[in-house]
Amino acid sequence: MTISYRRTIPSVTALTAFESAARNGSFTKAAVELSTVQPAVSRHIRNLEKFLGTPLFRRIRNRVILTPAGQQLQRSIAAGFDEISKTIQDISKKIQNKKLIISCSYDIAHLWMLPRYYRLQKALGEVQVHIIALDYIIDASEYEIDISIVFGKVEHEERAIVLSREEAFPVCSPEFLRKHAECLDRHGANSLRELDLLDMRKEGHSTLDWEEWFERLGIPFDSPQSIKHHNNYVYLLEAVCNGEGICLGWRGYVDAHLKNGTLVRPIEQSVTTDRATYLLGHKRDQVSAAAATAIEWLRSSV
Image (cartoon, rainbow, N blue to C red; front, top):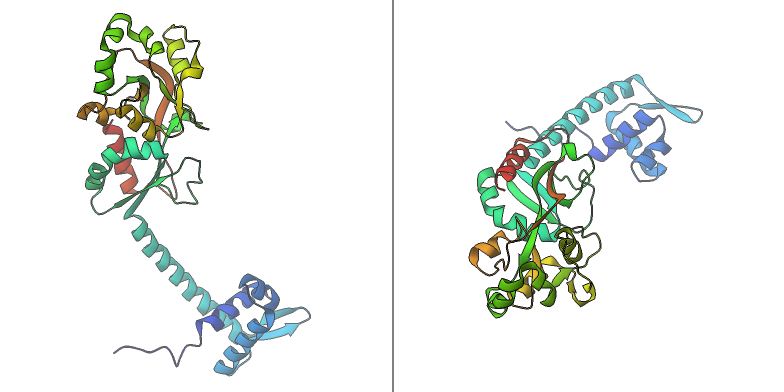
């Protein structure tokens, strides 16, 4: 037999107003806490007292104190609200445990995460993987982010997982290589200075550029003004795939292009730095089983 509480329990709004007023010792403070006005709180409590047939508060100067009936009701409501709150939190945690949120930049999302996305999703089973792709830093706790993947340098590197150190090398389309093969064969890396070079120029972009790349190889390069710049690495790679020139490719980010042949390495020289792609796990109350599985899977996928 089901029980209807409609006739035995007053409105939840009235009970909420009573609980706040009892805890704060003031109808005015309760109104502020509930984002309403003091007369509304007074009205709810009058209706509650009418429903029960007994006073719940006594006024003393600028405060209100509970009557014995009010004290009894407060204890019951506090226990009930506490149990409801715990139940809601339990349900919410169960839902959260079926969701994994990963944050990264657009470039990392497109070139690093997406080639791994479906395999990661399969490894996690029912847990749904959500990717937040942004080119600026966000508060991991505010957005309930489980894992971040970032490139460059990070504070407290000992707490981060290095997925791969920066290694950059020239890449171009097969057609571009055929057109300039003779020059590249004769002069190697030095010949790159005479060819069409494309590069990134974007605020916050901390990867190698052509100037640093040549400098680390000990090759003079005095014409950076001749480089064509893009502000999006994904679009830059598209331009290179279309034969517009040569750009720097990063291990882990251009692997799919090299594998399917849309990009090739015209020379073998590469440069490594102390920058890296890092994986950061964000603890809320604790690392979920899904986050721990994803972190281990992503580490082994490199």
